[in-house]
Length: 490
Image (cartoon, rainbow, N blue to C red; front, side):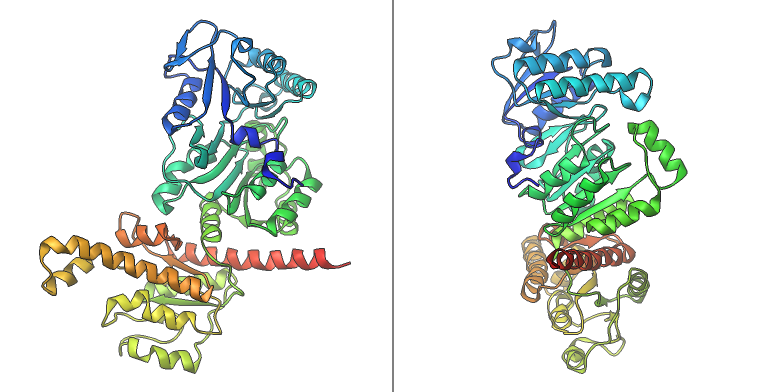
């Protein structure tokens, strides 16, 4: 187990100051050119040395005809070349003194036959020159905090707290838009591993466990190559930060797909289920759940138990949330007489003080963001809340107009109201140290939803997704405590 992030072989790969780039040209349709263009577009502040046998300049950078001609041994070699010349390129990098690489090129173990021998040759060269590399057959690496997007798709969104290791490059690159549009979130660091000929999933868990920018770790897994070491490292890391995994190889069809994708041999579904539980890893049943769980776990304090209060002003979403809570192993406690008494001023005669708390409407809509959740979070018999958010800026606009606020002042007033109400939720969460997960059919196009998310309140796209995310948080707390207790035993 590493004691410092700089000890990881992934550190120079995710934090390079200098990159020797092989495979980019002035042909913008080429994969290498797309990746180099992404690195430049993101604003990478290090030095890049394109290596090309003919071009004198590549994407407006000075190019070198041979790696031995670049001014220094770069921190990282990025290789996007035809399969047949990858080995000799890696060897030349080793002779130059470059000790870390990303090999995007495919045509190795995943294709079988000669590809297996080609991959063994890469491994032998790496051993001889003490090179650590990701791939082959991978997409690249992302570090939003370093402005490094070494993939072929443009990055979207802000810096984030989700660190990801994936045996499929798509779940790094194609999640940029997904995370940004749904959560206003991005990756902290993301690794595409490909065939894992050298660096593997265990190395990534160790690195992301030590990464100060990563609060939660997402794994896309088709196979685990070092079973015992995987469990050992994951158990240690999962006591410090959550790990969520999606396993794609449990069915016979999944096994065949994984074999053709990265040349990996998947195992029985129940075996992986046991490995994850033993490791303290939360298992997601879909890619959607993988990121929902990571988002909630990285945003919220953990619940002390599985008791949830649902606050809603619509019966249908409240009932759907209640049903999903039970299916997720959560309990909906009855409110204490003390809480019921505090709620009385807020609940109209059409409302219900049962759990879910269905308010139907409130005389002061802004009570929904402060007065009511304050009372519910003070309930000693509950460990957290789900809240259905329906407020829109159009509703606020109507109210302000009816109050006679001049049109010229309405936008400013709306912004102040939205900001203050969302901040109220954050303040309540911090005061009571209980998680609050929102759900809404509104999107980030709505100012309330975007502001809540940007301030750190996770808001999911449905009551079912919110309930499952809360269930994952409760399960993580349980697994973590179990591991800690086992480790403390003599």
